[in-house]
Image: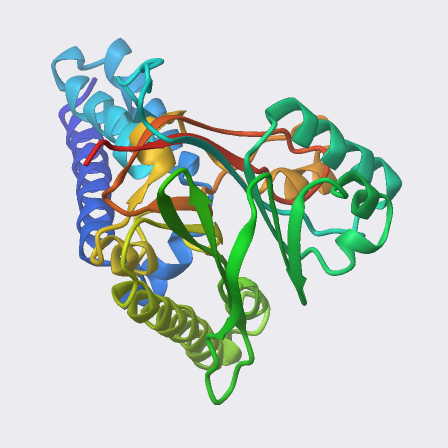
Length: 349
C-alpha cells in the first residue's frame, strides 16, 4: 500500500470513529435536541455497521495494526448504539412475591384483516398475559375478540383497551391534551393480593409526519427548513406529552406500570423523562437481544421475505417496587408492531 493510500485509509478510519463517537455523545445528551440526530433516531442503526465492516476488511488485508479501530467501532454500534441488551437474571424464583405477566401491543386493529385477528388470538393464547394493554384498538371488543375476552375484566376508550385477569378499579381517561393535539391515556388500578398497582396505557404522538416531511425535502430542497420545523414540532409534542405523563406518575402512591407505544427509542428524551421519575424499562432489565418492535411491516411491503424490525419504540416501564425476571417481544404477524411481554414481580418490602 502506498503512503498516499495509507493516509487516505487512516483518514477514513478516523472519520468513522469520530462519527460513532459523535452519535454516542448525541444519544447521551438527548438526540431530539438536534433535528439531524432526532431523524437518525428512527433510522435502522445497523446502517452504521456497514462502513466499519468494510474498513475492517480492508485493514485485514493491508494494514492489520489498524484493524482494532474499526472493529471496536463495529462492536460499539452493534452494542450500545443499536440498543443490545443481555439480562443476567436468568429464570429467578419469585416464591413469596406477587408475580405478573404484562403484555402491551399496538394492534393496529382492523388494519390487516381476518388473518391478523386470528394471529392476535394465537399470540395471546401463546403468551397468556395477566394484564394486556392494547393501543390503536378501536372496535377490538366489538367483534370476535370481544367474545374472546368475555371472561376477562376489560375497559375500552377510543383506541385503548385494557384486559385483565384481575378486577379493574379506578379506571379513568386522562388527558395529554395540548392546544394543537387531542390525546389521552388510560389509567386503572389492579389489586394483586394486598397491593394496589396503578397501570397506565399510553400512546404518544407518532414521528411519522415529521419524518415524512424530511423525506419529501429530498426532492424539494427548498422545503427543508419547513420540514425541519415540522420534525422539531413533532418532537416537542411527544416530549410535552411525556412530561404531562411524568407529572401524573409523580402524584401516584404505590407501584406503577406504564406500558404502550411511546414512539420513542430507549435513548430518547421521552424515555429519559420517564426514567427521571424512577421508572425502569422491562426489556433493558430482563431482555436478551435488541427487542425491536417496529419496522418489519415496512420491509414486508418492499422485501416480502424479510420480517426484521429495527426500532424498539414500545415499552413496559415500572417503578422501583418491581423487578423483571424476563422480557421479550412477540411475533410480527398481526400488526405493524410486535407485542412486548414481561414477567415481573413485586419485591418484598
